[in-house]
Image 1: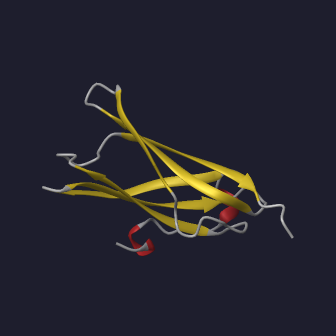
Image 2: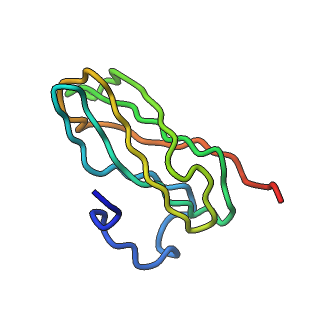
Length: 110
């Protein structure tokens, strides 16, 4: 799955001024589950040390697991997009109900 699987983004000005995390496909096998997604930097400044956090919810909306992953690349200029793949071993179903958020720092190094 590539970036073409996500809806087309016509204009960054229409997006909220924040770091946006979007989940895409979730698959699972007998070895575990996998969730893929993208991160878009739309805050107006370069960022670094990017991490994506995923909170998986059960069928009642109660958190049952939390995991983190570093997207590639982990530093983004304004308007930059990175991709992430979260793999959870021995998880026996698709990751269907989840909450995504990101942690990052301003990239003020020059």
